[in-house]
Length: 116
View 1 (tube, rainbow, N blue to C red):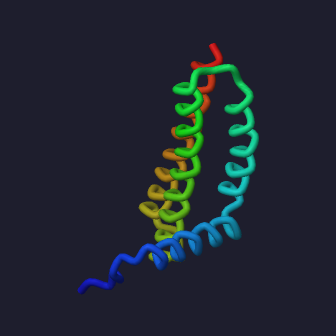
View 2: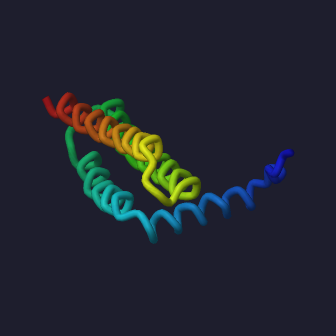
């Protein structure tokens, strides 16, 4: 059984924007990271670094947002599957959080290396 609708650029964009609207409304971590991204982008523009280094900082910063979105999706699916405490559900959520943490560490390391 395949419940996937046919690909349609405008419908898929609508789905993506719906997901963004939901995450902005429900996920405080994503809102905080998005708020920080404003200052990070300003910092990238201001610093005296090569275009390559600026792109590395930009990509690693956007990666944090992407991983946070994936983590939110994991948490939503886990919550859909089980409402009560389950060790595997906790593990899935913890692993998603670890991915976010690693992406933030990577971004910080990129900043340190570019600024040195």
